[in-house]
Length: 596
Image (tube, rainbow, N blue to C red):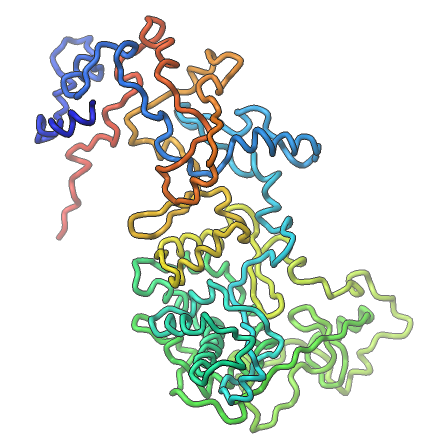
């Protein structure tokens, strides 16, 4: 009735110039008069529905207090009925199981709103292993940022595809994050769409046109890796926001890359594509470094585009394994630099190798060194003994035996080594393992792809976002943090639960603390009765926060009128409602700073 009357007789027509302060706060009522006090009679004339008291004819509550679904996806019913009892029965010492509502909820500032305690206090004991991947039964625990996709090298060789060197044993796929990095303009997005239906590991039935597309894709992958090594990361990632309102600032770049060390990229390049720099010098895509708003780095001059040399048309990289042997502690200390004498050494990646890692190059051979190693006056990285002094450097026969550290097995896999999170390499992929709750790398990519999201099957941002929010996604952020769809087709990830700050604009207010003493043995359940309605989890899949199934029944007005309105407690309008829902705007706060 109230809504219908408001449509016929809108209240704003009664006050076209808004409601003045003196409409409610009337002055000159005497020295002891409280100017802030407003009677019920002062509220009634403007409202479409007028009533005498809260207990008799106040409108019924409309699904109060559930106006939208909770921002944190926490199914009380499943936790109360299944997870908590099962965990309690296992008697796991390190896991804390809540037994009262106060274990998870607490009053916030002002003691008005019931907030949720931090993740570390209530959720971490059961869920931290899911985030860091300790409970993942299959698949990598980290998310791949860069991969070297597998290609049908033999077929490409037969059809004389000019892809340069490429490892024969690579079998992975281009990840959605990598597609987003490559497809920063229309031409490259079309390229990715064109090869999407091809089986890159079996190109025997591919047409010549498709082979050309695969050839272009291979060079795009190479130039991406080259650009990340030789150019500023911000210049490369800035293209992610091309054609959108996304701002790729320095702080976001740091989070999107998790400050990946350059050595991780150069190490991958040395192992995967040792001839990359020589190839790029002969066949460069200037667009990877150049853009309309970013100049190339001064230290990286850009020569003109040239075709690859004939010697580089096809040079597959053979997978190699490095033997690991136990050596004396003295040998480890003396042989840490490249040495053509055949002595053992440890390379920068912790592998035990024999001899010089860079064999002597013929003058006609392609340049396989990175730019940092090309300087003619570069100095050796260590003071390793010269070959002639190699015999003197060997430890004596009666020297102490190898220590535990020296004889430790170096074959510990990289994923296990990165137990606390961070970057590591596995096969032909560079992966990032979440370091814990609120991981900045995952949050940055989720927020970026959510803002760029467009609801189409080929949208690269949408594909990346769906990868990050999948049921088995690394970090499992959206298992608890709900996702809302917006009018621009973008997505919003709700990182925090509802708080007093998010409810400031609501007209209704309720103070929990004064009611704790009268709740009785039922406590919170005296007002918040659990609901057996099904479909709680399914309602989150629709991405509409206003279409949901609640875990609790709405609060009835009768629960309040049992005390309020029967001369046991106040029932005036301002007890539960506030007029200044959006704050008070005075002339001084609206005054603009004068210009010149």
